Image (cartoon, rainbow, N blue to C red; front, side):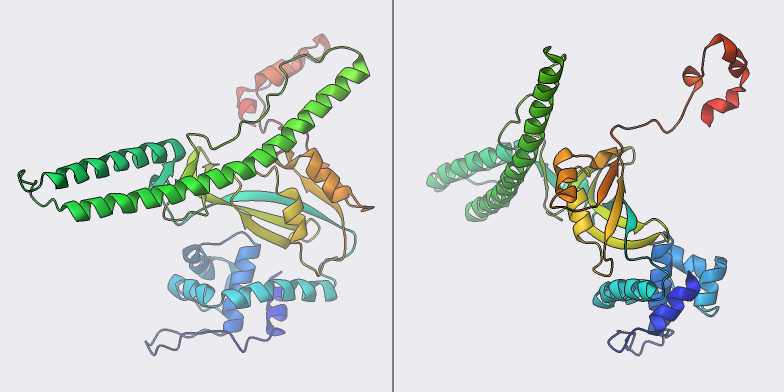
Length: 361
């Protein structure tokens, strides 16, 4: 891969690449080398600038690409920030070169789609919930009324040290304005969520009704409940980065974005990517396939896990005479096994003698 990336980057027009020209004495590196370094490291799963710098010492392919030089993490980060448009254009150009060189198949390909959570440049503690925002707006309004009352008797009542009534009123009015903005944003998000939840509800009702008609019996289990309108008390809005969301990441909840990638399975080359603010992948099948590079002529198969499965999304992808097929897991499977999964039939009693270490396999 490193040889192909180096050849592909050499074929690109890098005349608009921005390099360090501050006259600080910092080492200069060819734009083609820096661009190739980023593309190779991103393609092989390394994104942090400090880690990329370490690879210039430890990884043979990266040392070869850098001609045994070692750009520091500041230079790598600065090049990426100042050449965002170049990186975006290079993405499609490298794919096209890969297709022309027959490194990448562009017709009747299979892509695998998955997502990952990326931390936003904002703390989750900078967020406010809908319920708390409403309470704080009411409290601020009451405080303003109290301050106005105090202003009426200011001539006869001494104010607290450092208290200026006009400034205090303005500070609370500004707080109400910010909280109102957060409240409005959460109400708009609630409307979008209602449309999605209503579609899922109608899908579940239709499936339940079809099952009852086919079996002639009333479906077992609790009937699906219709979605409720309006925002929920625990809905969040972040003042530092309003576009990010609280999402489950790892073992907890963080302020994140949801990054999606479509990968051509034969070469493991990323052929499409986008970032969204949805906390799960349920609605991301159609938009991710929509951003697959125009270099790709036809996707014949799409592989996704159970988090992407949605009947409406699958029908949309496979509609209008398209011969694209979606292969989706229907339920989540366990990643590990333990002794309770061991067969217990009499003819398989020997399997009970597996060592205890098998439990962690």
